[in-house]
Each structure stands twice: as C-alpha cells, then as structure tokens.
Amino acid sequence: MKPTDKLYFTDSSILDFEASVLDVIEGAAGPRVILDRTAFYPTGGGQPHDTGTLGDSRVIDVVENEAGIVHHILEAPANLVIGATISGQVDRTRRLDHLQQHSGQHILSQAFIQACGAETRSFHLGPDTSTIDIELQSPSDMLMRNAEEIANTVVFDDRPMLVHLVNEDEAARLPLRKESAVQGTIRVIEIEDFDWSPCGGTHAARTGQIGLIAVRSYERAKKMTRVEFVCGRRALQDYRRAHDTAVRVARLFSAERDSSPDLVAKALEENKELKRRSHGLLELAMTAEALKALAAVTSSRGFKLVKAVFDRREFEEVRILASKIVEAEPGIALLATKQPDGARMVFARSTSLTGDLGKLMSEACAIVGGRGGGRPDIAQGGGPNTDKIEQALEAASTSISTAV
Image 1 (cartoon, rainbow, N blue to C red):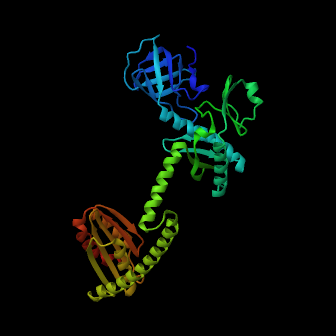
Image 2 (tube, rainbow, N blue to C red):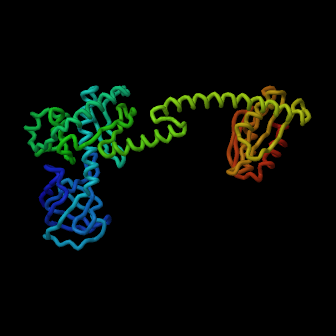
Image 3 (cartoon, helix red, strand yellow):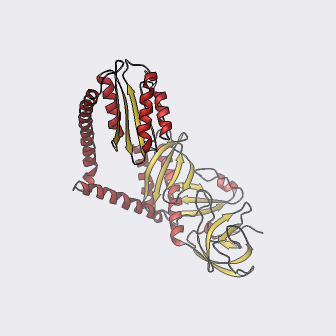
C-alpha cells in the first residue's frame, strides 16, 4: 500500500476533503480507517493529532506508521465500504490552535538564536501551553523579552510562510536552522527573510495568523532552559486570566489594577512585622504560662514534671510552652494536644538532666498508633488514637525514673 497523500503537507488550510476508503481495520481502541489521502494531521514532531469526522463517525486519534500510512481511529464502529468515497472534516478550532502554536514555535526558536544564540533542542505542544528546550545556560528576563520582541515583530509584519518540497541536495543548499532527519523528499517551511526549517507539522500561511506570542515562564532543565509560551487565542486567554487575577487583587485593596504589586508588597511587609510582634507576644505568654505550670507542681528528685493534655491547641504553642518549662528551672515537660485528625505530643527536658526522651516518645507514639522520635532532650510525634493520649502520657510519666 502506498503512503497516504497528506493534504496538509502543501496546504494546512484544507479542512474539508473527500477520499477513497482503502481499508478498515478493527482494533481495541476503535476501527482504524485508511484513506488514499487525508487532511488529518497524525501525532508527531511534538504536535498532537487532529480530530474531526469521517462521514458520520468521529475521529478521535490519528497515527502514521513507518510506511507513511495514516490510520484514522474512530470513536465507534462505522459502516464503511472499501473503495467508497467518504467526506472528511477536520475540527477547525483544534487545527487553528495547533497551527498557531507550531508556527509560533518556529518564530520563537529563530528569535532565541538571534537574541542569544540559543538553539532549540525539543518542542512540546501541550493542551494549555507549549514548551521549547533551548541551549541556554544563563537565562534572564531580559533575554526572554528580547526574543519575545523579535518574535512578535515578525508576527506583526504578517510575513508569508511558504512550503518547499525539496530533495536532499536542494535542502543542503538552503540556510536551514536545523538539519532534517528525513530522507528523500524534505518539507521545508520558510518564513520570509527570517527562518528556514524542515518540518512536517501544520503551519500558518502568513505570520499574522499566529497572533501574539507570549513567553509565560522559563526554568533551567537538564543543562538547558525550558521556555513555556502561548500563541494566538491561547495568548488571549492567558491575558484574560492574568488580567482577571490582577483586577481581583486590586479590588481587595480598593485600588487600580496596576498599583496592586506595590500594595501587595507593602501588605506582605506589614504581615511579616505583625508575625514578628505576634511571636514576641506568644513568647511572653508562654513564659508566663510555663512559670504558672511549674508553680503548680512540686519538685521530686531535683526536678519538676509537668504533664498536660490540651484540646485543639496549636501544636506550635504547645512546643514553645514545653521549651519554656524546661528553660525556667530543672524539669521535664510531657505535653500533648488533641486535634480532629489525631493527637500530637512533645516531650522536653532541661539540659542539666539525663535520659533519652526520643526513645520515650517512640514508646508513647506506639500507644496512640503513630510514630515519633527525636533527640534525647526533646522529641515529638503523634498518632490517630486521641482517646489513648492520656494513657500515653501516663506511661511516659511512669518511665521517667529510668529516662533521667
């Protein structure tokens, strides 16, 4: 069987076509239909497949085998007769989206070469954003903006994007941005006075069809830089989300959108100061509570033992309280707090005492069905069985004589 005639190869604007049915193969994923020609793009080159319809049946996947034969996978069985003529229709919205992202990638890849000499090594067209991995060791906001500016200048120039089908010798004489991995007939996409690249994907006829190209983010990845970007309608949708977010934030401050970054920064600084003051007040309160707890117990064997279970008290408060108790005078604190999802405990002792509270904590956690441990002088843990927390502290209290 001859390779499928790919209509998108010469004209990516073809969405409606007629073709002859060459074969229908039943498969687990659905019937596979082979046509003599197709406008459906199969998954490949970092670009997902087209969807649409063949006759009354929905095309849910398109794949191409090593022989160049395209298989159209249908959603449900269809009464197709081999040799019959069938009408195909590619989903316009999906095709336009993929066309914009793939064409935008060509422009952005060349823009990075011109901005900082960074070659593109891989491309992935995702459902919401796309990425390219470029050979760039030290990315920066300025380099991203420079490449973005070059790319959008080409888009706004509305330059022609031309398709050339050439042989290997002809391809060798062209200023290709990358070498072709294809032998025989090579498809080359030319962006007038800007870029030449071998590619089998769907592309715009002119750069203006791509719409805005926007770099969303970048990060170092495997000794390269991964650049996340959006084009066309995706760029519009991304702008709308960012705009709506900025407006909602600004409204919280009863301010204009563009003033929200400064207001957020100010609020964060104020919040840091409030946290600092709150922590200082908490330290004072815990010191006072620790002294009160110590005053309520008597000393035995040269130290005081403070044991308490709190209901839904923040564990951080309980931890600070334990530290304040053992700092004030020789003592041991066995404290716990009951929470809806379980109990948490902290054991602490003064440095002048001896004993392994980490081991003691492990034993207590076993009683409440959890895990824990720590250093000899301070340990923490917990478990889900809050009804046994008093039993756990009592067992720890009984063992204190061997732990110090």
